[in-house]
Length: 184
Image (tube, rainbow, N blue to C red; front, top):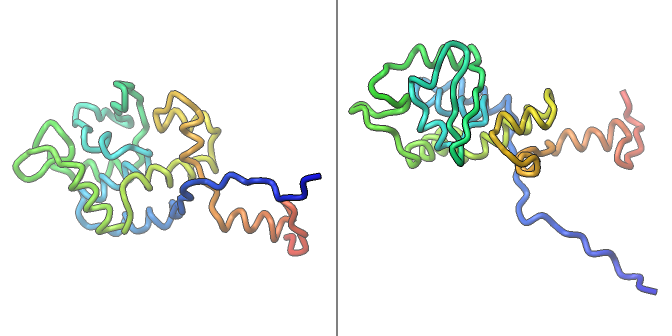
């Protein structure tokens, strides 16, 4: 009889996703409208850095924007009031929404530097925060569609459980083997 402990596969990388609301508050305080809009598009809509930088003024119509994603896939996403307000504060200098003072399209390096400077993280973590937050309100299929994934398993890699939420389930609610003594 083998009494050894079972082997448990440990994830290669555990991502500590920041709280959506905390990130949103930080982004709201940014004075530069172009930077604030770029970061909001990633946090509010789950856009990839490339999707933000490739956004054209002709892709925006009323309450929606057309996003051209990986593999030539397109999806329509709604614009929040905050995004519409930021867009109205931008000057149209080029075909692209995000361009420098000479009208040249912004680079991925620009977006990475701004995200690091203002939020202390990289752009892709905002996509994870969006997906994780959206799972609190919508079915995983809605998250999949919003992120532009063809495979649901890809979407599942973007959704995370906040550590404190899991702790509450265990300690206060008696779920997942907790004793539930602190039930509300």
